[in-house]
Length: 182
Image (cartoon, rainbow, N blue to C red):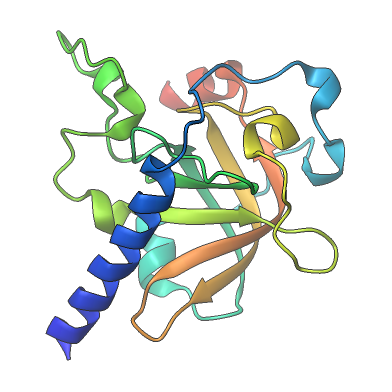
């Protein structure tokens, strides 16, 4: 049973990686605010958000959920043609926060040993529950390593893999992060 789940997770992960690495999209800073669709954004951070590891462990399929994480987990965390991306548990340290590390893609968390269990796929959905077909960077104005809090539903498949169908997103400012670190 465990072996079957592991193989399903590996197959899903491989398919996700192929879709991510097969894109020709460049990794860049967030677009101008004029392109951002504020329909999906929250002005205040939701309370009692679960971290990624806890959400993966405890969430049930179709359960309402609030989860927080940092955008990353891969060299290219974006999914081409849709508002979807991966997030990583805040307990993991990206390379740019490691003394002496000069990694050019710190959001890939290449030094993390527990990355698969600390990562979730996020898909931003419209009012009809369909995944939005705009790039998440343009739709939300986000970039790699941004901390986001997502409000939505957990989606758990038969193999136990979890993703988030997010209807609303709060993007933490640098000021928010500084306060939390103190």
